[in-house]
Image (cartoon, rainbow, N blue to C red; front, side, top):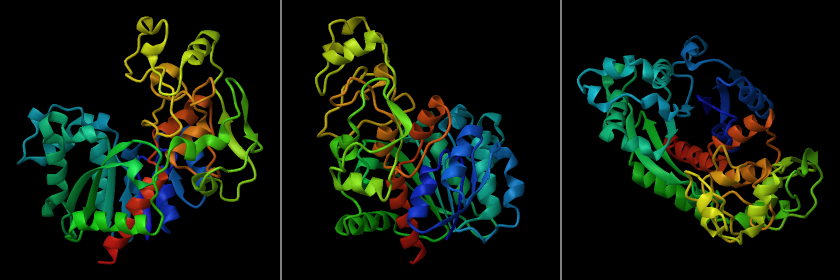
Length: 371
């Protein structure tokens, strides 16, 4: 089946669908560095590095020829006040300039009319403007008048990536649209059960994910290097596949004060366990948090290299996670190489849809298409 990936980032969503046998024919990403990284990892996909508002000409003539559209508009696009939504007037929501990201996403779905779409976003979308945002989105896709080939039946569900083989507690809202009327609860549950029974979904810990990569200290590492340890878990074997070299395993060079603080921390320790903890200002409850090997990671964000940003300090080394360790926790395979400067690479990893979660969603679409 053919797929279009919107707001693609580095391609975590694409990666999971490709793993399930889909053909990702087109992707869109506005950030040039991230688009280049996507293209190097997905060489057979046409990448449109442009604002989504300019994408419509590229999908003209694809109506009925694309099976799935994936991707989700960033939640900043829904910043309007819910009180302004009038349920009998869709143009007010679509025409608000602050919602242009969703407007163009919707326009592309209108133009292409895929059999399915899978939109991913933050769970907070459910409560934005007292639920009026999500209600309006559902109404737009469910309105027969908005499409030539029939409306979409919608299903929304918050999924925790840790339940789909990803060693990370990461909650994401999934909005699943189908031209067919389906028993969505049964569909999602059946696919999960089948994947558990086949061994494709297994619960994993931080140790399962990165214990073979624990030789670096602060400031050490290189873009390309040899593996120093043999894989120590099935998860590590699966991520390595047939790789002979390790990429993106570079530890942040922390200053002496940060390292001194980190050295005080035992596994599970937090900011308030530090001697000067009360004097360290941070908006993150897990600031200066050291991970535990036998637990799952908190959500990987775009500041996992910063001790004060959350629970991202290595379980035993005196540093935060390297990009490769964060990518492992996101469930990227080691042959997926992140290109660009440090801040771009961290953004690519932190913003990505975990490929194993995407793989599950691809399996859901496949089963739905067979019904």
